[in-house]
Image 1 (cartoon, rainbow, N blue to C red):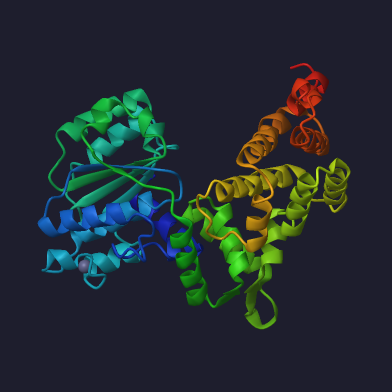
Image 2: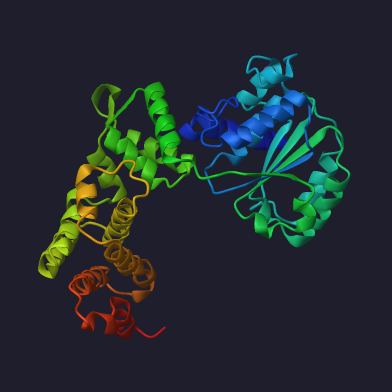
Length: 398
Ligand SMILES: [Zn+2]
């Protein structure tokens, strides 16, 4: 893929996605969400003029690695006379990068350009001076996907980088990079984005887009995204399309998000836990049967009950209690810490059992619930036949 094809592709995608539309434009923590440590370090590097030739950005997907790479490229190339004011977002260089028309910012997906020939091609190109900007940036996404030969070829470029070129290697799996490559890069570790920062950013995007959204719906989206802002904005975008009503008015409710995610109603989760509190296996089985009849995704239901019990475990242990409602706190108080640990262990076992059991997910859920009630009641027989063994015995030979 040529540089111009690459930037053309980026431009098109840019107009179609909230994530691209709301990429951070500056190192402001309100924009570069949840990565304050990185924003501060890079801002100082720009201010002091200490720019490295190669960077390694590591961290989970959707936490801002390539966005930060573009931001860095912009700050390095910004024409504002005050280095501490870069990026200014007003000069021609900033403008070109913001609109995606800067041909000197080259994004390469290593997953589809992973061979030694691709890297040789790259080595040829880096010899040429940038056409508009001062420093040409190569952003290599999913860098761990490069083959060993490709890394060896790339190493030569890293050892003697031309002065007008900088590299940013982004990866979710830094351990797969050869030490020889990693040691020549300045490394930054991106963290999962905290829930509070995620909520603030989502709320701001909704305001900008004229999307009306319930706080509960926002919290559901943020939690589902587990620290990935890209996932959260992708989900928000889907929900906005889904919720668009007459006259273009968009209103997203928690119920709509639950439906779209196949999330079960909170009341059903609380009801199942209530059955456990009362040591009432029959009531628990009825709730599971109702969920099945309503066409709920039971695998998702199992995941949610595990997540909910885990919240109760945290509450009971005196840990984090953000976003926990009083009802959850009340339920947490009805168990001992040891009981909650046991329950989390039983239900989290479903994650291992369900994908390989070949069974309707209703049965493992039922067995887990019965086992939970037996364990809570102190039935000795429960220890001899945990749900997982029972399912292993029934599942087809592998
Ligand atoms: Zn500028």
